[in-house]
Image (cartoon, rainbow over all chains, first blue to last red; front, side, top):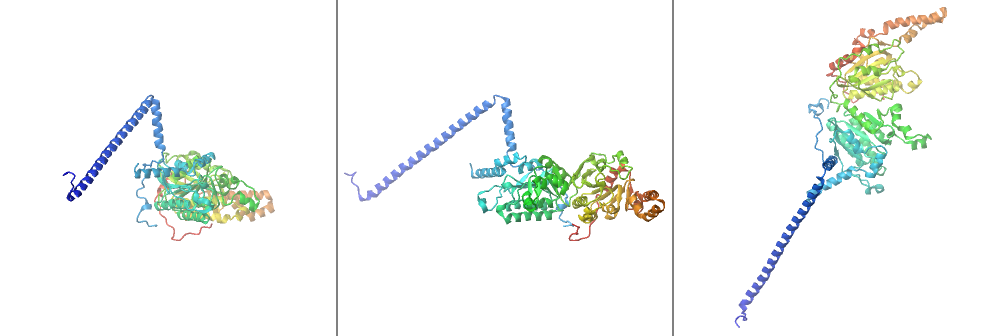
Length: 110
Length: 523
């Protein structure tokens, strides 16, 4: 049999080819799985965003029911932000004192 | 969440933790006592949004008595800078919710830091005291902390104004910091100051006293003179601190703050022409005179309930801050004694240190006689006032209203003590002593002879006649004016304008004392 007859010279060639085929299949599998994972993640994120947006829409719709409610919430938010001490002040209240003798470089007394 | 955002969140959390001091429960306890927390007090004192806190994350480093397990961010004092009506000020407020505000090494270092910065930039320091004393667990380190603060109080004295507000207990060594500052405020009923509390007093002397009786606000405002101002509650006290602050400058090189004057400078008060009673022994109220001459009748009195025979305080003339010193004929006839001399001297020295002109209103019959005064060193106390006036280089305007006799005439900013402009009302009597006293001394021999020869009635009539002669000769301002000891005799109702014009003349006064390390005021 010609096909089964393996010469010494072909042994190494066949072994190499087999290994290459196996690794090629493995790489294709990894790539396919990777693509599936990425697509799944994106889909999940979109779904949760849509859910959140719907929730927010629902809340907004509920608040829109009364102007008083809106005003109360706005005031509460305003007061909260005003009183939130963690916000650093950005107000400069120091009145400048130009020509103050204290800061003069040539001071006869000191 | 990015790492940076996490870090920012951590900062927010730490700040929030620092802001609650000793915790919600301790804050509730403080409120239940009718007291505010350190941060609430600072909020009330400073312009909105102006406070910049320093050393919020400082912690003690004591490991004695389980202290390594107790840590509070900020360690019992809130320090930083802010503004009052736009003027920069440094503050520290002891936080009673953290270990009863007890003073630790690190707490002291926080206070020292703001004092050091204040000295560099020439801004006043206001301390809000509410502390149980030294943190005993820290031992000598706490004492060292006190000493560091005292040293800075001493060096800052006369350079930047220092104000102490006592808003709770202040006992033991802690009392010396307020005592070294320029002005002390106390709240009635909730603040007290003493070196040794009721416990040791009972143990050593067997004397039973309450905290209020020993070192309450009313005691220090009326008997000891330790406190300059008292308030019924903390809000009132903060308002008073702000008011005082409006009269004083930023430092010893700055001029006093000026405000717009809405009161006519030439306003005449006719009632001043009739305020002096005909009888020289009849009193009148010096407050009425002050109210009549200062801007809008506004007078911020210092130590109003201590040594009432002298009145000291701040007012404005044409919008300019001025220190007023006045004898009060309604109290002890306006005599000078130990307490009034001390009170006046300290005020004059403050004004001089911070370039605040002094207006002196004189009606003084002399020094209070008697063993009680002499034994309490009235000589030294009187010398303090004399020294203070003589040493002062700020503009000094003196108005003599009625009596100005003997040594007390010299002490109350006379011409020879470098009084710049000395005015007198026509009713003034500037002499060595009153007419009756002088006549009975000068004519004692003659009166005795007349009494022996003609009887006591004739002697009394003779003395009366001599009294009238003396009065005509000396009981007026013209003898002093004759020698230039009085610059002008003025109409009482025009006093406001004359004082304003005098102050305007003296605005650029320049007078320097001889160079020296320091004088030796009779302490």
